[in-house]
Image 1 (spheres, helix red, strand yellow):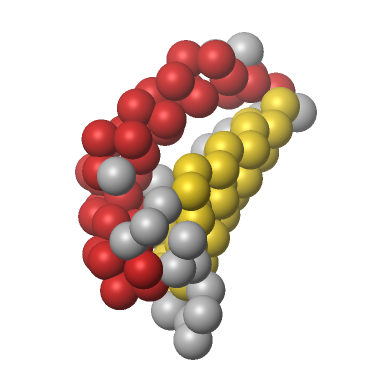
Image 2: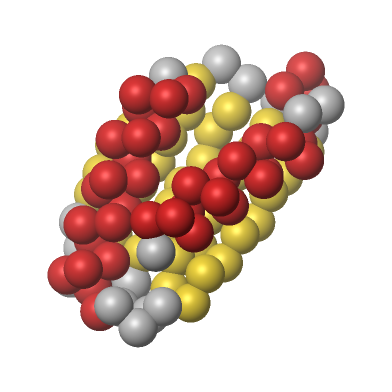
Length: 94
């Protein structure tokens, strides 16, 4: 099983970061067929997502995005491509 861990610092504050995280979740659902659940917290929001061979979470707070992804055996063969696509999408949103 392959794992991805991506962290992006930002200066947006929680309200703006929340909007970006929500948009990221919408894109993950539309482009990659992910099932996403968005949970707002007082200081940290979390987007959990999954589909066959992939599961993970995006944590968002006032100063950073932290993405952790577990890739199944077959999907893990495409780890570098998947990581590049996730980073590109997140960086475009930021």
